[in-house]
Length: 142
Image 1 (cartoon, rainbow, N blue to C red):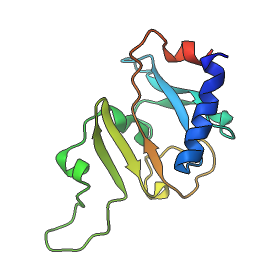
Image 2 (image 1 turned 135 degrees about the horizontal axis):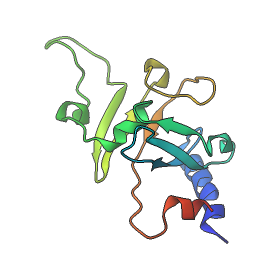
Image 3 (image 1 turned 30 degrees about the vertical axis):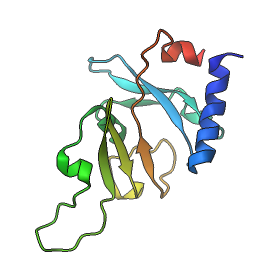
Image 4 (image 1 turned 120 degrees about the vertical axis):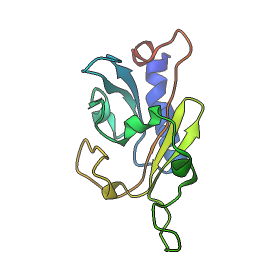
């Protein structure tokens, strides 16, 4: 059994375990060029439409995984004047070994969230995954 066959099964199990609507994996392509983008190469069951979709650099909140959060972002501090009440933040970036984990609690509150189909209420989490073995994402997907 090839890893390319097992990856969608793994993502489907992860989807079930965390209660997500869908789980996708993508790779940064044409890094450093004006055409830089994330191309999705695997998806959980029911979200196969994401395979082959591209997210251009600067489009969507997903790209925030590659930057380090500021102290204010990592603590989730609301940007309100001192002494005023604010609800918990609806988007945060938390430190991660390879960048940031991006968490959006209400996706419809942010124009930066990119929908590949109809917008739907819910949460969004992006986690950086760095391949450090000779098995790169294109080899995994084939």
